[in-house]
Amino acid sequence: MTSSLYVMYANAFVQHKADMLPIDQYELQNSEYKRAKMHYVRGRNYAMEVFEQRYPGFSKNILSTDEQLIAHAVSKVQVADVDAAYWLGASWLGAWSVDPLDPFLLPTVSGAVALLEKAALLDPSYNEGAIWDILTSFYAGAPSDFGGSMERALEVHQLALTASKGLTPGPYVTYAKSICITLQDYDGFDAALEKALSINPDDNPSTRLATIISQEKARFLQNNRENYFIFW
Image (cartoon, rainbow, N blue to C red; front, side, top):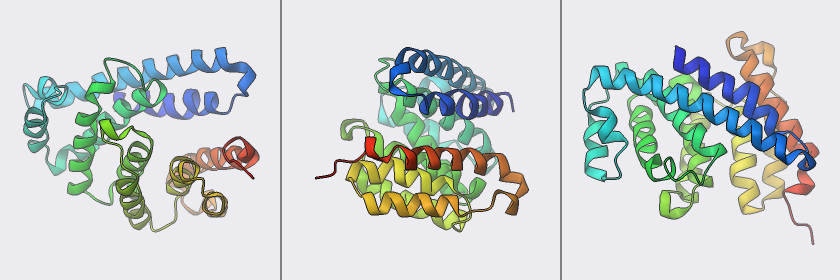
C-alpha cells in the first residue's frame, strides 16, 4: 500500500503536471521530474522489500544484469504476488521514464520488464490491463539495445485493450503517445484520443480519477499535436 501511494502521487500529481508544462518552463519541469523520480524510487524500495521478505535474495537477483539471475528471481513470483509485482514494476519503470539516462536505473530495467511480463502472464486482466499498458509504453519507448520493440509494443497494446474491453482511456492515450507519435501516424493518434475522450468517467466510479487524469493527458496531446508531427 505504501508503495502504491508513492507511485500514484508521483504519476498523477507530479509527473502528469510536469508533462503539461510549456517548453519555456524547462527548468521547473526538470525539477518536477526529479521530484517524481524520488517518489517512484521510494515506492520501488517499499515494494522490493515485500519480495525480499517473501523470497530472500530476490533483490540482488532481480537487480542483476545477469539474465539467469533475473529469471531465477522471476520464477518465484506467484499469483498472490501480482499486486506487489505491479507496483514494483510501475515504480521502477516510472523512475526510469523521467530519467532514462540514469546509469544506475538503465542497466536494471530488464528486471522490471521480466517481472511485469510474469505478472501479466499470471493475471492477464489485472486492473483492467494496467500491466500490459505499462509494457506498451516501455516497449515503444525503450532503445532496442535495452529491450525496446515496436512489434512487442503493438502486441501488448492489443492485450491491454482486450483486458480493459476498451472501457478505460489509458490504453488509447498510451497508444497515441507512445506508438502513433513514434510511427508518425497522425490519423491513428487522433482516433485513439477521440476514443479516450468518449469514455464517461462516471460509468465506473472505482476508476473515475484515473479516467479523468488520462483524459487530461488526451486533451493536452490533442491541443499540442503540432509539436509531435511533421506536416509536409
